[in-house]
Image (cartoon, rainbow, N blue to C red):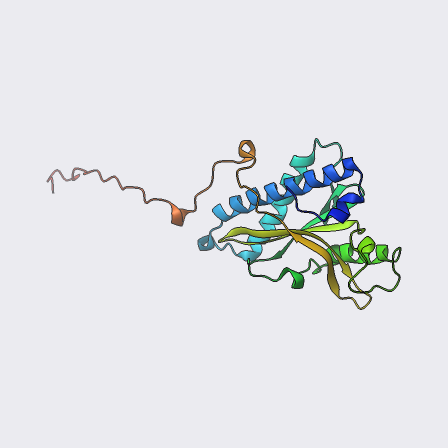
Length: 226
């Protein structure tokens, strides 16, 4: 089950909290499937690289999230400025890759490489003015867990797949620097948590058993038999 701060859950209604937990659990399950599928299909011999891998994880993740929530009465996926958000009113969740390794320091990783990604932190900064016009660190609890723009941040690579993932909220301070208001590491989801939706695994060529060659003798067309 999703690991979320009690202060966050307590400010939501019972139905809102249940929807948030449902959404986070589903995102984690889908991330595990997307990573596993793309690791199996990754082939450096044909030119696949980490950039392509990251793009496929994003595209396939967005597709699976849309399918996963298409019949949900509360949670929905919306497009926004070339990206997408998962809305769980009153919260909005962005899903972004933060790094490649399990050893990455998440406190130094932020989804702020584009205006769309930075917007989560900037909107949280704007919301903080309702609590404290001069942002201080650490933030007061009512401000820290009152932020509505959340991030699901995942780390992974083409060799190891999904290695860790988090849920948190970050802000861009007045000097333009990002800072996590709060962040929680999540348990690794079971890859086969949705077996009916998971296609048989694709085994890379370099991991498959060599197929035996069948050699059939052929008679010499000259009739010599040699």
